[in-house]
Every structure is written in structure tokens, then in C-alpha cells.
Length: 270
Image (tube, rainbow, N blue to C red; front, side, top):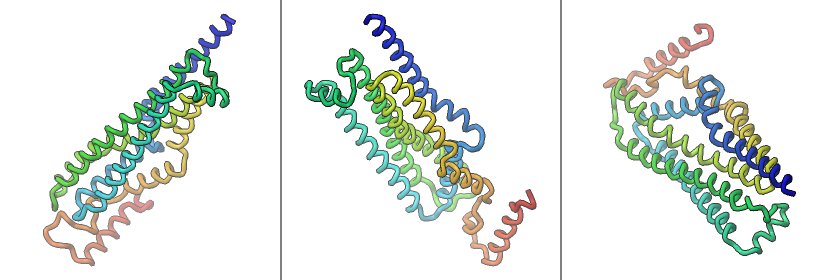
């Protein structure tokens, strides 16, 4: 029996090591892979930068305010959900034996001395996600202040500086939101430890595989990849809204400039 417990403990330690490697190593792996094309993380950075470029030269920024408001509402919802889950699992740690009787019916070994550690690992994943959501919320509020401070009718060089500054604020905000959502995947993987060491290891690797597939091969990632390609060939400043000239351009001149841009970026001229 002692030998059996010894090997069971060793399997738990190995599975826990796999979990932490997957949990903390995933983001570094994605950042490394995103240096090439075809990763959602890099494509989103380009799309957000293009959004900030358009936002800076847009006269009426209500559309951009609505988008930021949607992000704030989403982060608030997930942060509230994390708090509820943390409270629920924390209550299970200090509850009566009735809760453990239900857990036993699900096939969970409630007599294990590691049960508290297993539940604490789930809380740790959720708590890290909560901190990501809270930090994302604060940075989104910084975006609100930054958007409101951008002056109208700036010249091209000044617009590019404001674009870079706004991108430096919104990029980490959205990245922290994504990290918070990613925490749910690893919370589920941590919860698999309740059923044993092998479920923990398999769920950890499965979470990395699922997240990686959605980053590189999902329909959304392909759409964002195409969006990035379109944005990289789009001429800036946008010719249909000549904010950098004192007088509006005639319609005929705008059409001629658009045709010239299309001819310049056509496949025959590449």
C-alpha cells in the first residue's frame, strides 16, 4: 500500500509539472510562433493598430466609444463570473460532509490528502484570470480617456504618433482580456485533477492543443489573417476622407486617386 501511494504521489507531481509547463509556457510559445504570419495573436495586433489609425482621423468617434464600451461590459461580466466561481469553490473547501458526498458520487476521491490542493489549484487559475480581467478593465478606462483627448484635424505625422500611443494602450488591455478568458481553459484542466493525475496531464495538453488550433487554424483565425492582408495593402491616409488638406477634394479627383491606389496594389504590379 505504501508503494502504491508513493507511485500515485509521483504521478501527481509529474502531472502537476506538465500542467504548470502548459499554463505558464503557452503564452511564451504563442508569442514566439506569432513572429511569423498565420497566428491570430499577431494578426489581431495589426487589426487593432489599423483600428486606432482610423479612430484618430475619424471626426465622430461614437462608433469607437461603443466598441470600447462593449469590451468593458464583457470584461466586467467575466470578472463577476470569476468571483462567483471562486466563492463557490472556496465554499466547497470549508463546507460540510454533504458536499463531499455528492463529489464521491461523481467519482472524485474525497479521501485524498491532496483534495484541498487540487481545489486550491482551480481557485489559483480563476484568481489569475480575475486579475487579468481587472487589469484589462483599468486599461480600457485609460483608452476612454485617451480617445477623448485626441484632437481633431491633425496632420499626417501627428496622426501617426497618436495612433502609436493609442495602440500602446489598447493592445495590453485586449491581451489581458484574452489571458483572462484563457484562464477558463486551464481552470477546467486543473479541475480534471480531481479525477486523477492522468486526467490532469491529458486535460493540460488538450487545453494547449485546443488553444493552439484556434490560434492558427480556426475559421476566425483565417478571417483575421485575410483581414490583416487587406489592411496591410490599404493606402493610408484613407483617400475618401482627406482630413489632411485644408479644402475637400473634388469627387473626380478622389475617384482618380482611388483608381491609382487600386492599380498600384493590383497583383500585376506586385
